[in-house]
Length: 124
Image (tube, rainbow, N blue to C red; front, top):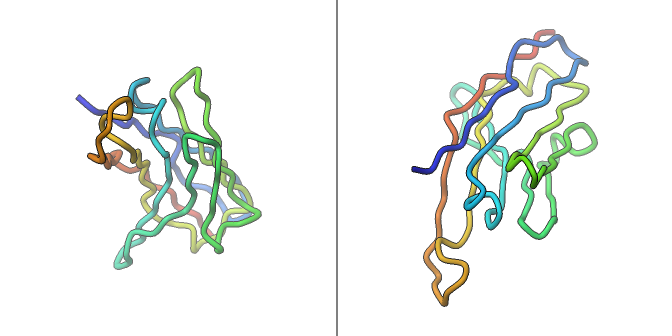
């Protein structure tokens, strides 16, 4: 059973920092592009940061220079280091794993899994 376990959310004052963690199975983590998304109340879910299995990263313009996504392959864990937090960063943050379902064979079937979400609240 696929499971993405998120942690690290909480309440922090503006200007503070949090680090989110997302751990999954080795079989998923070793082949997946990992990402962090967030959804604020009444808003669409949006991409925050993305990290491919090959090491490429990209960030939403609103978080560039403040957030950093990283992967620890030994721990099957992706992190989102969030610095200089702003009230507008308040949202539920979701971990995502996406990739080929059968990477060792000729197949285009893909997976797209989501964690349960972790709340980040930034007070002014």
